[in-house]
Image 1 (cartoon, rainbow, N blue to C red):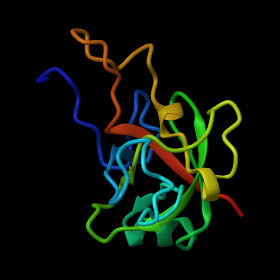
Image 2: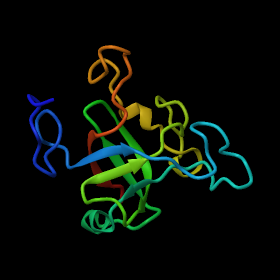
Image 3: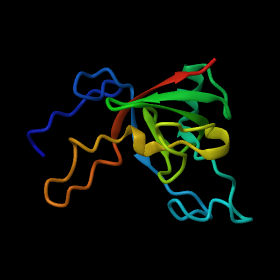
Image 4: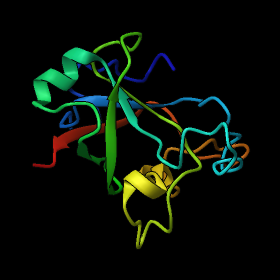
Length: 143
């Protein structure tokens, strides 16, 4: 751990070209990929929550679509705000979305966050679990 470099805020990833870190979150009334259709569920979408200042810097409004790009892939997501998040953090729940190869509309099916996760690197060498949080990403408003 001591040997790992500490990145400057807004310069994440191997080459520093990513602006945010994607972290996992939980959502009420949903258990991973289960319970999306229960009456108390808020629907099938899993918004990409960001700090309100980050949303303003993107020129986007809650409910709009953004593209989220990692070193591994790109996905579309509905964006939302969470004042409790630090600037530079994107927070999304895993377990949503259709097949990443044909993801569908993120407003109705959610976003397959797992598409952003590389399984061929950045994994625990003992148990093989890939990194699912603190993933370097960047956001782009879809106009």
